[in-house]
Length: 229
Ligand code: URA
Image 1 (cartoon, rainbow, N blue to C red):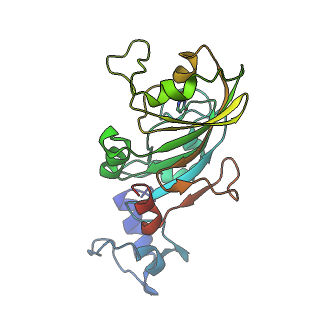
Image 2: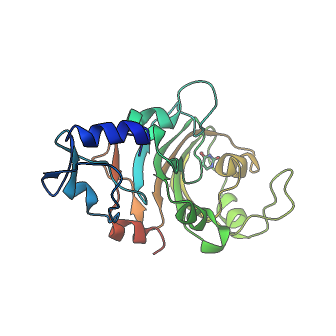
Image 3: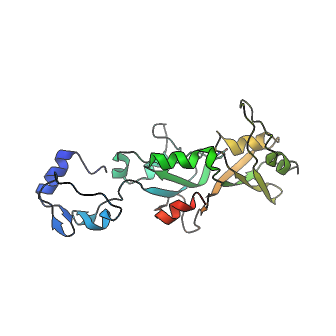
């Protein structure tokens, strides 16, 4: 969980700095069942331990941050508490948003969940709000809904997507896939250009108004289940 090496943890235990149900552990070699409530029972230096494996975070991704573990420049992982960046399994984003896309981004250390969410077979709906450089011309909704739109360099047409017109230059787009730069390329295929892109929701989860860019919350089991509703 990023707290330290085995020997460092043994030192902490020996020094009585790790407690379970209020009692200091005398050694770090005993076996303790890892249950979701462990952070309410185990403390290090009086602080509840971090969430155990299987966590899902909902982040309001700010503009200008990249969804990558290794690229140069600001990364979404810079937002995680430093210790959380040392965890194994690592916390990764569930799919990606472009550097210049803001909005709802999930992160998890649960590889199986990650693959389920991004699998096109699950048809998880992603809703984006796009501001466009030019007025919509009225042909977009039918084209996006057709299931025939072929993006440049791809072998398979896009699955049908839903368009809701908000204004002449603003639209809400619902897609069930997560192809590279998908929304930008869809509008580019109509001769338009996406100026601003923001993800409002994913499955049954919406970005709460109370969450400012850069802020995140841990999801409960019930909220995680909403992804697939
Ligand atoms: N489509 C895009 O073009 N960019 C994103 O970040 C997400 C969807």
